[in-house]
Image 1 (cartoon, one colour):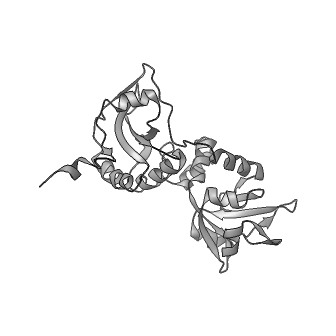
Image 2: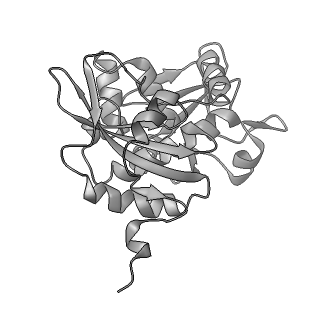
Image 3: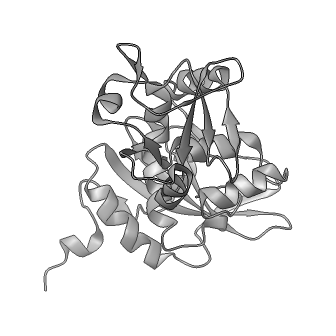
Length: 251
């Protein structure tokens, strides 16, 4: 996860509970995460309630309203259930869309992070917009310098190029070094693409965080004119037309 250097949702959850990670970054991480929920196949297809029967398992709150438990690890689900249950592995946003109108709790018995029905409804509404969960504001102040990265991230390139080749909506991508006074250089991946920022960046985060410490890696879209100007002064490391320089070589 590219969120203040944390590499898993559990780390982000812990940091959020101690005030070291902003709530919005935590919520963005949750929304892109795959989670586990106790339910039946009918529950997954038809949502929380079907013919008055709770198909996705929930516990009643003090007011008698359903609260859906969900889990970041299958092991935590089984520890909670204490018996064999049917469960589904779903994207957290998809789960929230299914149970919209109810409340939820993440990892009951461990983190007990609660999501009210109002919070869930708000997150669903925001997800319909072009969210950019890990995108940074493009800072053009004098304290920030942009240029070629000091160290070309060749290993990262080898991971991203095959990923982009499978995406028909990605046109090209660049590496840019960003240096702010008094801070370490960060590598920005600038991507020119169509469609949802949320979906693409979420997939990229999951992919690269498996192999890299992402604390100094950031993503930004190509659509901003200031971004275009700087990106276009460098060679793209990926282009949909040419795929990669190696593809054009004859041996």
